[in-house]
Length: 137
Ligand code: CMP
Image 1 (cartoon, rainbow, N blue to C red):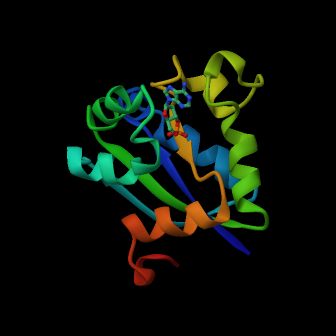
Image 2 (cartoon, rainbow, N blue to C red):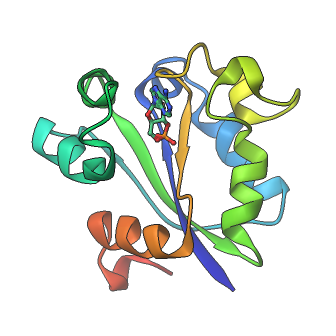
C-alpha cells in the first residue's frame, strides 16, 4: 500500500471538474485517503515548490498556484505513485497521452490541471506538508 499527494490546481477547480478528476482516481483503484480545498498563500506555494526555486518558471508557478483554490488529496493504493502519474499524463498537456487527465482538462504547462508527487521520498514530504497523520484514513 502506497500513499502519494495529488493537487487539483486552480485551473481545474475553476472549470468545475473536481468530481471528474476524482472519478479518474477512484475508477482506477485509488482511494481518497485525505482531501481538502485550500486557498494557498504565497508562502505556502513557495515552500511547497521550494525544489523548483531556482527554475525560471518558479515565479509564474507560484503566482498560478495562488490564483484560486486548490483541492489537495492523499491517494492510496498499490503502486499509487506510478498509477497517479500514469493517470495525469505528461507535465506539458500538449505531450500528454490521449485520455489522461492533463490531455483532457489542461491548457498549458503552467495551467496543467493536477500535480502529483514524483518520488516516494517527495510524496512523504509533500503529504506531511499539508496533512496531519490523523487526517489520513
Ligand atoms: P507540477 O507537477 O505541479 O510541478 C512543477 C510545475 O511547474 C509543473 O507541474 C508545471 O505546472 C510547472 N512548470 C512550468 N514550466 C515548467 C517546465 N519547463 N518544466 C517543468 N515544470 C514546469
